[in-house]
Length: 369
Image (cartoon, rainbow, N blue to C red):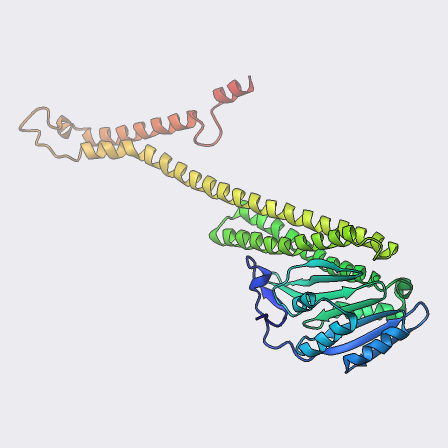
């Protein structure tokens, strides 16, 4: 049994098919925007049967269905326009990736309007049937971008009313693509910030942020890739079913989608590079710590050895070989001086090897030559 469509909320790493569908898609509102080059008419329709007369009166009609809580109305609309029953089932399905299908002169398009709050994607599914004279959209929840499209038709911005109805498909795709570019910019800024943190102060939290960003970019790619295939299929298989003007604009839209896909791939690679930089930074920091500890251990090992030897307390009265230094007048100063000399010798040795900052002058001269 198929689920009702709802707005999809999914965290990075999940598929659209794993979305959380809201219970109940609400009532179904049908609004009609009919127009020609010189006039425009808007109407709210209660009975889908009224649509036929409107379609017959106007050369171009946009039927907008908001809310999918009344499947009978949706089926009735499908019968009026002779939509394929499998496509109508997809309209009511919550697990549809972006795609395009052609049924004779009618095209069926599924796309998602994306929003990103920095941690989670919100994908509002839009299903569209369109031809040269009609444009039918199904929204699980109201998409405000389509309000702007209605306003453009009402005000005839860019002479949109002179275009065929299939031109609206391009406009919708263009608005959808325009919403993704700011999301890409957010990832660009996030990766720049992570790059600074990785170099200056790598931590476990930094690694978690890098992993999260990589998963988010993967989710974004899963949205853009099928959209590219859908638009490419629309251009490739449409024949003369689309107007020449629409095809020209769809090619431009396709180029923009390819750009988005390139950006997402580039940022995914940057995310992988950041993980390598993080691991290198952590490794370098660990090496520096180990180097300091090694230097300290090396310097203080000889004094520790000397102190251990003279702390064995063998009775020197039993054997002349048992700690004869115990009877020396300067025995203690001798032990201290011996510790200092050995430590300084180790320090000099490490310095000459270049372990203590800049190498000695004779090594610098050798490197220059």
